[in-house]
Length: 242
Image 1 (cartoon, rainbow, N blue to C red):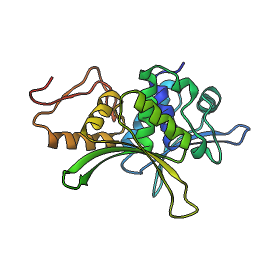
Image 2 (image 1 turned 90 degrees about the vertical axis):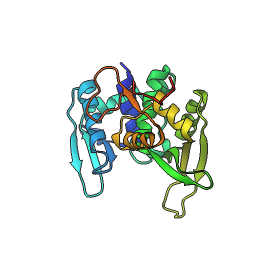
Image 3 (image 1 turned 30 degrees about the horizontal axis):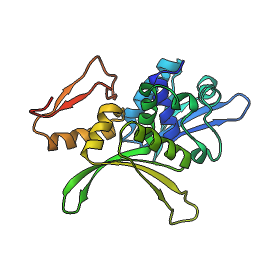
Image 4 (image 1 turned 45 degrees about the vertical axis):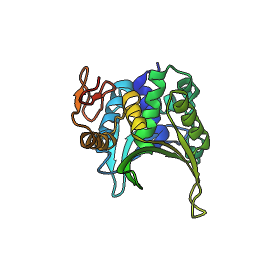
């Protein structure tokens, strides 16, 4: 049965996953990441796979990437048959948020968006001329136009101010990318409050920026969070505000 963790895991596969089978007896679900910066996040995803599927994935550390590999027909069938994710060549251009998730309630849907952003997204702070040198932005980049349109529609309908642009590659062999962007302090705070991040590499950037730009930062959590996981229930308040 679909739940928040399965939705988030699906989002991670949509963002940086590869699905493969020989159509006989071998089934593989890979999630790729940075060999150093994504280790904690991959540990978190590994715990989801163990909890939800009772399968133990393997972590492969390569010179330029980290691969979380799950060899399981059960996991493969959940993603492809139950949810309808594409697999094989061209997956990146064809993938979309599955209908079952797209039309779910917000607490399920937002976790899929979180998974996509934690794998195919970035959090950064740039210099803005005549304004500030740490202007916050969140960007999600994908080669799937339909996925980008879905994300824009979902975020806009939930009160986010969303930018959308098409990035034409400078080389013919590269793919056109579609970029969703959220800019400014209000959008960053809204994202972290309502959607959040389970990838420490993203959340630590936000924490450092927050500490620099507020007088007092209070972190209040409810329950116990898993190692490497940022809880949905993180509340950040400024001095003198509720």
